[in-house]
Length: 481
Image (cartoon, rainbow, N blue to C red; front, side):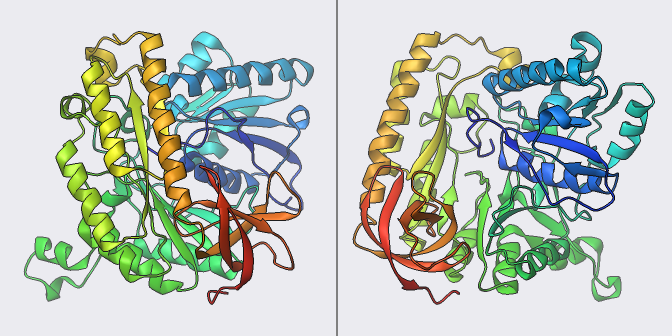
């Protein structure tokens, strides 16, 4: 499962600098995972060449697109409410066209067009290059749909625009799709099989971001640990094709090292990892390079072996503990976060307690916790009865969340008294007199502005904390500026 951006908040309206000569207005809103927000930047780049500038005014838009998430029912219901809002505005502005992008488009396909008649355009995650042709169909008065999944990396040759960017942090996609087939997850059905992007194009995008002043990149994939690129090579140098592939392959650890070396003053993060696929060479690469952040999002979903098997998670509780121990042995200062599902079908009270005891062992820095939501089309949806009562799911989720808050405070307290490097990203939401940034462990740090600015690496002495935020005072620029 991908790391989810808070699905309860309003979707982000994505804006880029107006391009001279463009006279059509695009309103694009994104929900769900980081990959969706990255994909919206690709869509805006494609449509910029078709005469569209982005707008934050829904009422003035010629084209309204919502990039959607299907990972949970709540996310889909949020999108449906937005579509109702769009259609209410369309009654006032009948020239407006409405489109659905992303995972809901792939999952529901023609249902939006034929049954619900809420949209003019349905485009799956691999079909954004076809948007110019689809918009021509729509402009001619016909509905349009393309939800074909690709077997190849789709957008490696497109330079994304950076929407609503702080000019400091950016996403760079390195893989698409997932082959793991967890029984609760729709991602393999909505984003297809795993495929990796050519490493040189990744490095070129990172170099371009650095030249534009960006200081931190998050490498994205549904499962970044599965990154594997079989490169070229002179065939005469190898005895056979298999030998050539092995000699020229780039795996995720190698890609991480390439990125760190290409821009030694840029910070790198990655998401999302899968415990069954994470290897020690990745951990050792993180430890070797100071500019690879010491933070790993490592979803576990459950602490019970039977439930893990029912989920088709190809690791056990014991193997997960061994991985955690190895990570902390190599990177003692590492921060680890989780995904956790409460109330998976057939989960007993004792099995729920196993999840809590796993959390006690790991003591995650933070996490993303949800009650089980049956997703149509998944193996769990087809073969398992959603038999845990809603009130039991809610109670178990509350217990998981309460324990995580306790552990988060335990972890943030360990930073108090230390001096830590922070990359300033924006002004604090709660105080115009304070900056907000993150340390290498991905923890938010807030401190007085003084004469520093967005994009500065600053050493901050941590003086206090909450369970989610570190508070401190700047003591000078770091050596990374």
